[in-house]
Image (cartoon, rainbow, N blue to C red):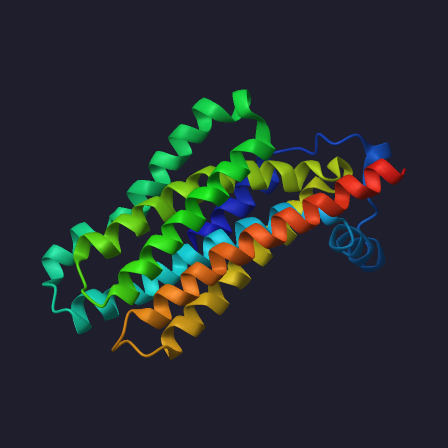
Length: 231
C-alpha cells in the first residue's frame, strides 16, 4: 500500500522533464526495440552483468551464511548477528570509498579495483575451505571484502550502464535492475541446493562468480574498445 501511495504521489506531483522531441513513443514495439538495442550493446552488458554477479555474491552470502555458521558450525544466533553484518558493513565502506576515489580514478579503474578485491576475497575463502580448518575469521573476512568490492562496483556499474545509451537511460535502469535481481534469484537458488556439510562448494561457487564477473567485464569492455578502434 505504501508503494502504491508513493507511485500515485509521484505521478501527481512530478512532471515529465524530458523534452518531448527526444521521448520514445510509449508503444510495445518501441519499448522492446529499446531493450533489444541495450542487449546488443557490449558496454551496457559489461556494466550490467558485472553488477549482477556482484549482487549475486551478496545474496549468496545472505542465503548461505546462516546454514554454515549456525547450522554447521554451531555459532549462537545472537553472535551470528555480528558476523552477518560483515558484508553490509563492507558494502557501506565500499560505497564511501567509491565516493572519494571514483572521480579521481574514473569508472573503469574503480571497477577494476572492485573486481580485483572480489577475486582476492574469493580466492581467500576458497583457500580457507581447502585448508579444512574452519575459522570464523577465515569466513567473515573474505565476506567483508566481498562487501567492499560490491560497494565499489555497484555505483560505478550503474552509472556506466545508464550512460551506455543516454537516450535509453530509463530502460537501461530497469533492465540493469532486472538482471541484478535475476542474478540474485539464481544465486540464492543454487546456494539452497548446495551441501551445507562442507564449506568447499559454497566457497567454490563464490570464487567462480568473482572470476565470471571479471571475465564478463574484461571481455565485453574489450569488445567495445575493439569496435571503437575499428570504427
